[in-house]
Length: 226
Ligand SMILES: *Cc1c(COP(=O)(O)O)cnc(C)c1O
Image 1 (cartoon, helix red, strand yellow):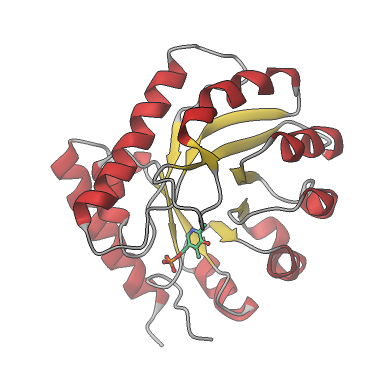
Image 2 (cartoon, helix red, strand yellow; image 1 turned 180 degrees about the vertical axis):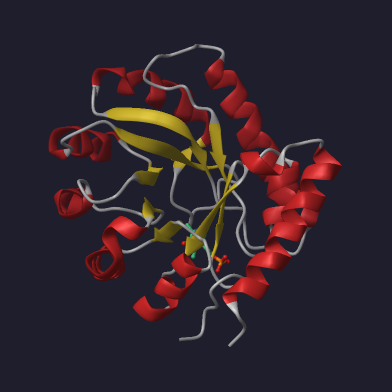
């Protein structure tokens, strides 16, 4: 298995190059190491390499890593979340990337003991298999969240469709940024919406060119075959 430090160096190089192309500052990009495929030992190695933001997409995987590592990392929950499981994680995670419906917002608001920074997950491409709120519903949805005092919408999140077509991927990210810009015009106190969580192992350079602030990288950083 490749060294995480080598993978991280490559990713940082690519971030710098993408930022140069887009006239952006590399310091504005947060790398979230997605540890869902790997062991606690490998996640520990990631932390020791300097990756302090970790992402998990399932409750069991998250709890297992959290019990072993808790305070050593900032925890991002990036997978779809069943409302009845919210209480098990809400006061352990730092940020949720998958807020996509009112029932989930209601449960988070009820169970959280503090304000939870959340990304609203958007299904930009309209693929049926994808989680996330339909593009057209996002504005109204976020407007309605103002009644939930334990939720702060810090940004939007999406996953690009599975395709080799770079233009399709790029358009997905570009559309999410445009939506983010429109939401920011409202200057809602509960939804500053400054961030864009988009880009994974195979498309993070494109995502950065299109405005990503949080990239979620698993296989090309910590590996995927353990
Ligand atoms: C697994 C996963 C990732 C990381 O995927 P890689 O392609 O391995 O980088 C990012 N985001 C979400 C929501 C995921 O489920």
